[in-house]
Amino acid sequence: MNRKQTFSKIYEFFNKILKNNTFLKFFSVFLAIIAWMYILYVVDPKNEAHFDRVPVNLSFEGSVPDRNGYMYLMTDTNLTVNVTVSGPRSKLLNLSADALSVSLDMNSVVSPGTYGINVIVNVSDDEITVTDVYPKTFTIEFTRKITRTFPINVVSTGTLPEGYTLQGQKVSPATVQVTGPSETVLSIQQVNLTVSLTNRKENLTEMLPLTFLNEAGENVDRRYLTISDTEAEASLDIVYQKQLSLLPTLTNQFGGDERAYISTELSQQTVTATGPEHILSALESIRLPEIDTSQIYTSQDLTLTIPSIEGITFDTNEVTVRITVRDDTEVTTLRYSQAEIRKFIFLNAPSGTTPIATSESLLVQIRTTKENAALVTKENVNCLIDLSAPNADGSYPLIVSSSAIPSFGVLGEYSLKVVMG
Image 1 (spheres, rainbow, N blue to C red):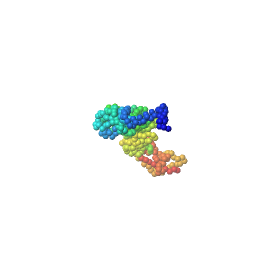
Image 2 (tube, rainbow, N blue to C red):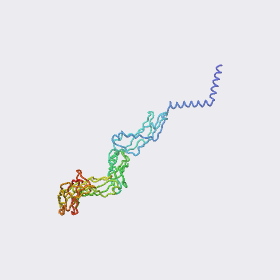
Image 3 (cartoon, rainbow, N blue to C red):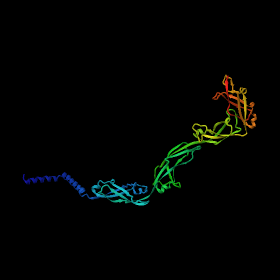
Image 4 (cartoon, one colour):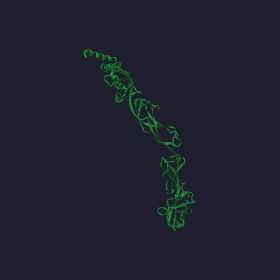
């Protein structure tokens, strides 16, 4: 094959290819890609990108105003700005708002007042520059910051049902810490927790909101305050109480009634009882332990223990009673021989027995008024020996009675020896 034939075949081959539409399409795409890559990575012209509502990082801790004891007054801290940047097109294609760091320059804040704070925008890629920011500044007011601790007061409203009373109360936590503008914090005069007592008959434990009041009793503006606790737990001890009369009782276990010339005076006439309403509603008084006048020789003070009642507590467990023996009393001593003793009457003798008193003699003191002293004779006095309850030494108590003496009492304690026949 000669040269002319060779070129002729090459010409026919390329002519056939160029007339093939499919080939031309692929080839055009290939050339476009080459051109795009050349423009993007070789020429790489600068472009701009715009980002709207980029959040501002309001980092205040450790800043100049924070170190100087100031704080900003802003109700809405969700600040945003619009940012325009420029740079190589290849860089901008994959750039997002996350690559932008927006903050505020607070270094100029050295005293309380209102400042125009500049916006600072940093980009993570050094080849990209910030060309515009809107707004460029934010107007912010700064004031001195203080912290104070206040006690929490429990304030009750309403009235408890009749008979019920608030015996005790506590609040947890007992104090609350408030941080904020000095003028606002200093205006706080009290921190209250309000509890309604209306119709309450049981103990109360409840979480309730706190109120912060100024000197005029008005609520303090809390917009710029940082409060350690906005609620506290109130615990109220609600009880039913009733005043009960105290009743002293004079008795003489060996015989007689001396109330005509021995009187009592209590250090208090009533006692405050606390307990269930259904128990106390049935009570009006409490009878104190008996005072045995056979052991009262002269006027004196005694301390009596108030009898206990299950489920009931008293504001005091003891009461003092002043016992006064009138001056116009007289003590008469009666002497009994063995023969007279054997004539004493026995009480509660066991069936089928014949008791015999073996004591050789007996002296019995009887007190009455001087007016009636002449009536105290053996003829007017009955002596009885009670066999129902022997003493520890085996003797039996003596009981004296008389219908002839208006008022009298045995003074002292007497017992006799008895054998059962």
